[in-house]
Image (tube, rainbow, N blue to C red):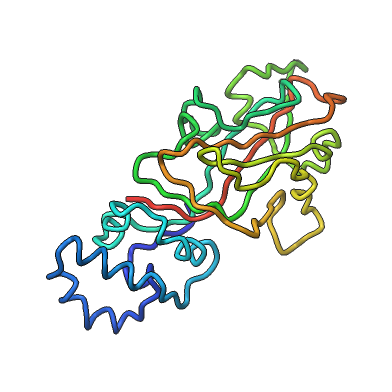
Length: 242
Protein backbone atom coordinates (compact mmCIF):
# COMPACT_ATOMS: atom_id res chain seq x y z
CA UNK A 1 0.00 0.00 0.00
CA UNK A 2 1.71 3.16 -1.22
CA UNK A 3 -0.34 6.01 0.19
CA UNK A 4 -3.55 6.63 2.09
CA UNK A 5 -6.32 9.21 1.91
CA UNK A 6 -8.43 9.93 4.98
CA UNK A 7 -9.52 13.51 4.35
CA UNK A 8 -13.17 13.83 3.30
CA UNK A 9 -12.44 17.00 1.34
CA UNK A 10 -9.63 15.35 -0.59
CA UNK A 11 -11.82 12.33 -1.23
CA UNK A 12 -14.55 14.39 -2.81
CA UNK A 13 -12.32 17.02 -4.39
CA UNK A 14 -13.44 19.84 -2.09
CA UNK A 15 -11.20 22.72 -1.14
CA UNK A 16 -10.02 22.35 2.48
CA UNK A 17 -11.02 25.89 3.45
CA UNK A 18 -14.51 25.38 2.07
CA UNK A 19 -14.82 22.13 3.95
CA UNK A 20 -13.92 23.93 7.18
CA UNK A 21 -16.84 26.29 6.69
CA UNK A 22 -19.37 23.50 6.32
CA UNK A 23 -17.90 20.91 8.70
CA UNK A 24 -20.20 22.02 11.52
CA UNK A 25 -23.23 21.48 9.35
CA UNK A 26 -22.03 17.99 8.41
CA UNK A 27 -21.67 17.03 12.07
CA UNK A 28 -25.31 17.95 12.69
CA UNK A 29 -26.64 15.90 9.78
CA UNK A 30 -28.46 12.61 10.19
CA UNK A 31 -27.03 9.55 8.47
CA UNK A 32 -29.54 9.85 5.62
CA UNK A 33 -28.73 13.54 5.18
CA UNK A 34 -24.99 12.79 5.12
CA UNK A 35 -25.46 10.18 2.40
CA UNK A 36 -27.60 12.61 0.38
CA UNK A 37 -25.00 15.35 0.83
CA UNK A 38 -22.25 12.97 -0.22
CA UNK A 39 -24.11 12.05 -3.39
CA UNK A 40 -24.43 15.71 -4.34
CA UNK A 41 -20.72 16.27 -3.83
CA UNK A 42 -19.63 13.16 -5.71
CA UNK A 43 -20.00 14.97 -9.03
CA UNK A 44 -17.58 17.75 -8.02
CA UNK A 45 -14.13 16.24 -8.58
CA UNK A 46 -11.12 18.54 -8.60
CA UNK A 47 -7.48 17.88 -8.15
CA UNK A 48 -7.52 14.08 -7.79
CA UNK A 49 -5.05 12.07 -9.82
CA UNK A 50 -4.47 8.54 -11.06
CA UNK A 51 -6.61 5.63 -9.92
CA UNK A 52 -8.00 7.72 -7.03
CA UNK A 53 -9.58 10.13 -9.52
CA UNK A 54 -10.95 7.13 -11.40
CA UNK A 55 -12.40 5.72 -8.18
CA UNK A 56 -14.33 8.95 -7.57
CA UNK A 57 -16.02 8.59 -10.96
CA UNK A 58 -17.53 5.32 -9.73
CA UNK A 59 -18.62 6.72 -6.38
CA UNK A 60 -22.32 6.27 -7.16
CA UNK A 61 -21.72 2.50 -7.40
CA UNK A 62 -20.14 2.27 -3.94
CA UNK A 63 -22.53 0.65 -1.40
CA UNK A 64 -24.21 3.19 0.89
CA UNK A 65 -22.68 1.69 4.03
CA UNK A 66 -19.17 2.11 2.61
CA UNK A 67 -19.97 5.69 1.54
CA UNK A 68 -21.10 6.51 5.06
CA UNK A 69 -17.91 5.05 6.56
CA UNK A 70 -15.81 7.08 4.14
CA UNK A 71 -17.66 10.24 5.12
CA UNK A 72 -17.27 9.51 8.84
CA UNK A 73 -13.59 8.72 8.47
CA UNK A 74 -14.00 5.07 9.48
CA UNK A 75 -12.76 4.11 6.02
CA UNK A 76 -10.36 5.91 3.68
CA UNK A 77 -8.95 5.41 0.21
CA UNK A 78 -5.55 3.84 -0.35
CA UNK A 79 -3.42 2.77 -3.30
CA UNK A 80 -3.44 -1.02 -3.36
CA UNK A 81 -2.42 -4.05 -5.43
CA UNK A 82 -4.27 -7.36 -5.19
CA UNK A 83 -1.87 -10.12 -6.21
CA UNK A 84 -1.67 -13.87 -6.66
CA UNK A 85 0.99 -16.40 -7.72
CA UNK A 86 0.07 -19.63 -9.50
CA UNK A 87 1.92 -22.57 -11.00
CA UNK A 88 1.51 -23.14 -14.74
CA UNK A 89 0.34 -26.75 -14.69
CA UNK A 90 -2.06 -26.68 -17.66
CA UNK A 91 -3.04 -24.52 -20.63
CA UNK A 92 -5.66 -22.83 -18.44
CA UNK A 93 -4.39 -21.06 -15.32
CA UNK A 94 -6.90 -19.61 -12.84
CA UNK A 95 -5.01 -16.96 -10.88
CA UNK A 96 -7.73 -16.57 -8.21
CA UNK A 97 -9.64 -19.61 -6.92
CA UNK A 98 -12.28 -20.12 -4.24
CA UNK A 99 -10.06 -22.53 -2.28
CA UNK A 100 -7.20 -20.02 -2.04
CA UNK A 101 -5.99 -18.85 1.35
CA UNK A 102 -4.29 -15.53 2.00
CA UNK A 103 -0.54 -15.97 2.56
CA UNK A 104 2.24 -13.38 2.40
CA UNK A 105 4.30 -13.84 -0.75
CA UNK A 106 1.64 -15.92 -2.52
CA UNK A 107 -1.56 -13.86 -2.46
CA UNK A 108 -3.22 -11.18 -0.32
CA UNK A 109 -6.89 -12.21 -0.56
CA UNK A 110 -8.74 -15.42 0.30
CA UNK A 111 -11.44 -17.31 -1.60
CA UNK A 112 -11.01 -15.10 -4.71
CA UNK A 113 -12.98 -12.30 -3.01
CA UNK A 114 -12.16 -9.00 -1.36
CA UNK A 115 -12.41 -8.62 2.44
CA UNK A 116 -15.69 -7.26 3.81
CA UNK A 117 -16.20 -3.52 3.24
CA UNK A 118 -13.30 -3.48 0.78
CA UNK A 119 -14.38 -1.82 -2.47
CA UNK A 120 -11.65 -1.75 -5.10
CA UNK A 121 -11.21 0.09 -8.40
CA UNK A 122 -8.90 -1.89 -10.68
CA UNK A 123 -7.06 0.63 -12.84
CA UNK A 124 -4.29 -1.52 -14.27
CA UNK A 125 -2.81 -5.03 -14.24
CA UNK A 126 0.65 -6.50 -13.75
CA UNK A 127 1.47 -9.87 -15.31
CA UNK A 128 4.93 -11.39 -14.87
CA UNK A 129 6.45 -14.87 -15.15
CA UNK A 130 9.27 -16.72 -13.42
CA UNK A 131 10.73 -20.07 -12.41
CA UNK A 132 11.40 -21.75 -9.06
CA UNK A 133 14.96 -21.07 -7.82
CA UNK A 134 17.35 -24.00 -8.16
CA UNK A 135 18.90 -25.20 -4.89
CA UNK A 136 22.64 -25.51 -4.29
CA UNK A 137 22.38 -29.23 -5.05
CA UNK A 138 20.91 -28.39 -8.44
CA UNK A 139 17.37 -29.48 -7.65
CA UNK A 140 14.06 -27.64 -7.48
CA UNK A 141 10.69 -28.39 -5.90
CA UNK A 142 7.73 -26.49 -7.39
CA UNK A 143 5.50 -27.51 -4.47
CA UNK A 144 7.80 -25.81 -1.96
CA UNK A 145 6.02 -22.61 -0.89
CA UNK A 146 9.24 -21.07 0.39
CA UNK A 147 10.71 -21.49 -3.09
CA UNK A 148 7.59 -20.03 -4.67
CA UNK A 149 7.91 -16.94 -2.51
CA UNK A 150 11.51 -16.45 -3.72
CA UNK A 151 10.75 -16.43 -7.47
CA UNK A 152 12.36 -13.60 -9.43
CA UNK A 153 9.45 -12.61 -11.67
CA UNK A 154 10.35 -11.14 -15.04
CA UNK A 155 8.77 -9.88 -18.23
CA UNK A 156 6.60 -12.38 -20.07
CA UNK A 157 8.69 -11.51 -23.14
CA UNK A 158 11.30 -13.99 -21.91
CA UNK A 159 8.70 -16.79 -21.99
CA UNK A 160 7.38 -17.02 -25.60
CA UNK A 161 4.70 -19.62 -24.83
CA UNK A 162 3.21 -17.31 -22.20
CA UNK A 163 3.64 -14.13 -24.27
CA UNK A 164 1.65 -15.71 -27.10
CA UNK A 165 -1.27 -16.60 -24.84
CA UNK A 166 -4.49 -14.79 -23.92
CA UNK A 167 -6.16 -13.58 -20.72
CA UNK A 168 -9.46 -12.41 -19.34
CA UNK A 169 -10.64 -10.67 -16.14
CA UNK A 170 -14.11 -10.93 -14.64
CA UNK A 171 -15.77 -9.82 -11.41
CA UNK A 172 -19.14 -11.30 -10.43
CA UNK A 173 -19.19 -12.98 -13.88
CA UNK A 174 -19.07 -9.56 -15.56
CA UNK A 175 -16.29 -8.88 -18.04
CA UNK A 176 -13.68 -6.30 -17.08
CA UNK A 177 -11.20 -7.43 -19.75
CA UNK A 178 -12.80 -9.46 -22.58
CA UNK A 179 -11.82 -12.99 -23.50
CA UNK A 180 -9.16 -13.23 -26.18
CA UNK A 181 -7.13 -10.26 -24.93
CA UNK A 182 -3.48 -10.84 -25.80
CA UNK A 183 -0.81 -11.25 -23.13
CA UNK A 184 1.63 -9.26 -25.27
CA UNK A 185 -0.06 -6.16 -23.82
CA UNK A 186 2.13 -6.79 -20.76
CA UNK A 187 5.42 -6.56 -22.67
CA UNK A 188 6.59 -3.11 -21.56
CA UNK A 189 10.34 -3.77 -21.50
CA UNK A 190 11.19 -0.77 -23.69
CA UNK A 191 8.58 1.59 -22.27
CA UNK A 192 10.14 3.75 -19.57
CA UNK A 193 6.80 5.41 -18.78
CA UNK A 194 5.18 2.35 -17.18
CA UNK A 195 6.40 -0.37 -14.78
CA UNK A 196 7.55 -3.73 -16.10
CA UNK A 197 4.66 -5.96 -17.07
CA UNK A 198 2.01 -3.28 -16.50
CA UNK A 199 -1.09 -2.82 -18.64
CA UNK A 200 -3.25 0.26 -17.98
CA UNK A 201 -6.96 -0.36 -18.46
CA UNK A 202 -8.80 2.06 -20.72
CA UNK A 203 -11.99 1.31 -18.80
CA UNK A 204 -11.31 0.78 -15.06
CA UNK A 205 -13.95 -1.15 -13.15
CA UNK A 206 -15.16 -1.32 -9.55
CA UNK A 207 -15.03 -4.64 -7.66
CA UNK A 208 -17.10 -5.10 -4.47
CA UNK A 209 -16.43 -7.41 -1.54
CA UNK A 210 -19.11 -9.95 -2.46
CA UNK A 211 -17.95 -10.44 -6.04
CA UNK A 212 -15.93 -13.42 -7.30
CA UNK A 213 -12.70 -12.34 -9.04
CA UNK A 214 -11.64 -14.40 -12.05
CA UNK A 215 -8.35 -13.77 -13.84
CA UNK A 216 -7.70 -16.58 -16.32
CA UNK A 217 -4.68 -17.11 -18.57
CA UNK A 218 -5.07 -19.35 -21.62
CA UNK A 219 -2.04 -20.83 -23.38
CA UNK A 220 -2.07 -22.26 -26.88
CA UNK A 221 0.60 -24.82 -26.03
CA UNK A 222 2.71 -26.11 -23.14
CA UNK A 223 5.86 -26.09 -25.28
CA UNK A 224 8.85 -25.15 -23.12
CA UNK A 225 6.75 -25.00 -19.94
CA UNK A 226 7.81 -27.11 -16.94
CA UNK A 227 6.31 -27.52 -13.42
CA UNK A 228 8.86 -24.90 -12.32
CA UNK A 229 7.09 -22.11 -14.25
CA UNK A 230 4.85 -19.67 -12.34
CA UNK A 231 2.77 -16.57 -13.08
CA UNK A 232 2.30 -13.44 -10.99
CA UNK A 233 -0.76 -11.23 -11.47
CA UNK A 234 -1.34 -7.92 -9.69
CA UNK A 235 -4.59 -5.96 -9.94
CA UNK A 236 -3.53 -2.40 -9.27
CA UNK A 237 -5.70 0.53 -8.23
CA UNK A 238 -7.44 2.22 -5.28
CA UNK A 239 -9.48 0.63 -2.52
CA UNK A 240 -11.10 1.32 0.84
CA UNK A 241 -9.23 0.59 4.06
CA UNK A 242 -9.79 1.25 7.80
